[in-house]
Length: 94
Image (cartoon, rainbow, N blue to C red; front, side, top):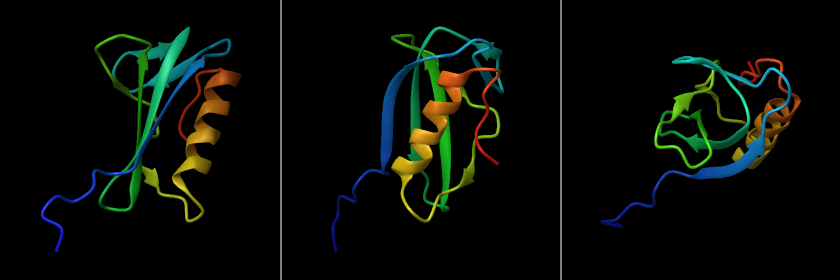
């Protein structure tokens, strides 16, 4: 048995939000240069956090805690990046 379990899978990317930005639970819409982290959680869901690039605060992308996709976390992460690039108050896929 491994005494040091591997950390949860997480993908992090920088993206420029399209017009209308991305919607967060905590502060509403954020725009500009953003960083998105998509993390696989132990319960089989994926959590999506978003921040202004190089800021300290992370926010929850509205609609976050989605079922982890059967194909891969990378597929979900790419979909989220595309949504944020498009803007319009982007939220996590439902």
